[in-house]
Amino acid sequence: MLPIDFSALLASSIHDIKNSLGALRALLTQLEKIYIDPKPDELKHLNFEANRMNNILMQLLILYKIDLSQFSPTIDEHEVGEILEDVSAQQSTLLSLGNIKLITQCDNDLHCYCDSTLIGNALCTLVNNAQRYCLTKVLLSVAKEGDYVVFCIEDDGKGYPENLLTSDYKQLPLIDLATGNTGLGLFFTDTIAQLHVQGDKRGFITTDNNSQFGGARFRLYLP
Image 1 (tube, rainbow, N blue to C red):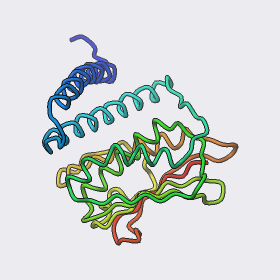
Image 2 (image 1 turned 90 degrees about the horizontal axis):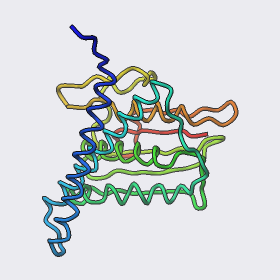
Image 3 (image 1 turned 180 degrees about the vertical axis):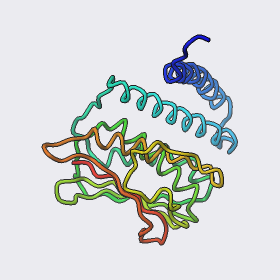
Image 4 (image 1 turned 45 degrees about the vertical axis):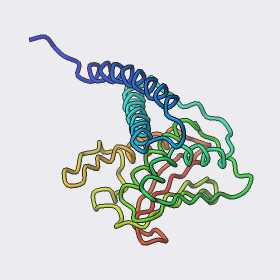
């Protein structure tokens, strides 16, 4: 029997899927030009899910490259408000379809050093997860706390299950068959956070059920 490198096979398969998904997204763009406003909700939802799948595949490829020590983030100074605007724009379609309110709060003129593409991707995934389990609203806020810029996501749902309330996010995520939650978003965000280093400070994440709305609270700390 031939030896198989399943990690390399998985990475190759993800590339193939991303190519097919790219073709699908191009077709959706063409369809959007055919329909005049307002666009059908089904088309909006389909477009959102295609983008969501693309984000997940990108996360898997990045984790694969990190595991092989073939990846490093592109860290630069960014305006936090612009990151929030991008996340809000990407999530607005599904939030509106589900009648979920996304509230954004950010200190004026706040900047942080980060890979904005990676951080934006991670926040989109976590906001998407929050809207799946909340009741009516999600709050995405950012503030300065000591030597860190803290991105916080809160909702008014039932809170995180016990298996996602842990300080060891380095463990590979396992699917919860009851909810379908894999924990991949937390695993990816924690991995990315730790690539952000300033002096003796390193990025990290926390989860708890102390949201001001009574549900889950996620926090991403970047030095």
